[in-house]
View 1: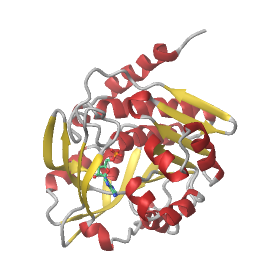
View 2: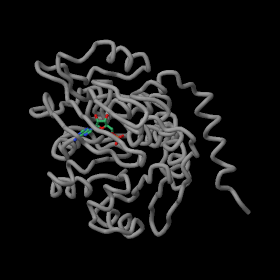
View 3: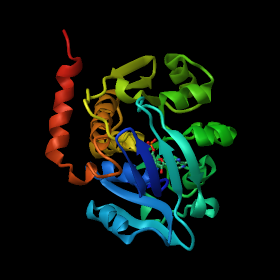
View 4: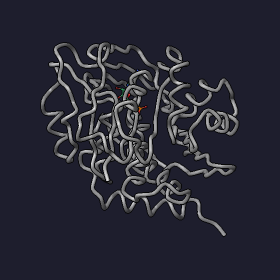
Length: 300
Ligand code: AMP
């Protein structure tokens, strides 16, 4: 099985109460791919500028990620600058410089067109839709988004939601897009727009999975130290889709497991800046933390 991801590869400037990193490796497709690579084969489509350090591409390749779809164009790499206060659940964006993304039209290489699962990571929803027009109908299509696009491209986003099987959003995005403060209602509304399954991530408070008339409420891993939440959403999606792809099905129970794998991957990612913690992560650590989730919420 294989997973196609289309999203941003970025240089991020991030400030949290625990430090600051300038022009560090980031981007929705980066975090997703790195996380999903622990589960299945990942085909990446994105764009960077010629200022992008080649060692970052080597790092992705070292995880077996297929980067043939990563274009290097003349110009500057997408740059996002943001900060978190002590409430690490919401980032405050200081600047978004699209740079080479401004004129980017993702082209899906022939060898990626039959990927089983597709993750449309956070980029312009028009580009996300453009991807679906170029591929054979995959087993599963999931998408993510963020406030920047909900504000700027709401109509395109609603159209996109009509084309996907799973929408993965955080609680602020779910409230913003539905204009509905209650998350249970928001989850139901988003399902009515198209996706059969909706995941609403609630940061340190876990995640909700919505299906036909049922909800799975997963806890978050109780962490004593969160250094940098950037990429939590995408590493969650990487574990979630990675598990569904590896399992080869998307029934309710497998989806519930996928939410836990997503939470496991996100919990590791936030332990350090950028991909610094993910770089040293092992499969055994993933398995062990997954097992630690069982007693967290099991009762008779
Ligand atoms: P998250 O997993 O939600 O924390 O996403 C973090 C990543 O999203 C960062 O590494 C940013 O580079 C990337 N990002 C921020 N704004 C945008 C945007 N408007 N479009 C695409 N990617 C973005």
